[in-house]
Length: 47
Image 1: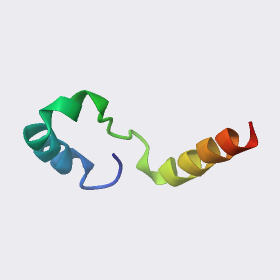
Image 2: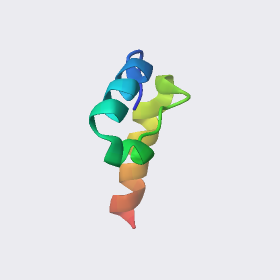
Image 3: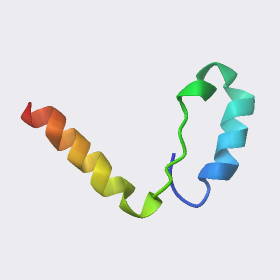
Image 4: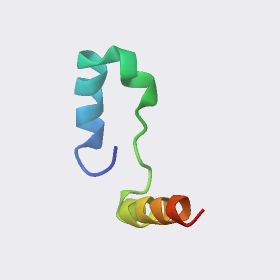
């Protein structure tokens, strides 16, 4: 999760969906999260 509301939404998701709580990660650098995500997708498609 990323962005200004990530910390708030994380607690709600953990309460509502405890079975997936271990999969949630809050992005430490939300400013460049889109760049990293698009780069990851490009790496996967180019492989």
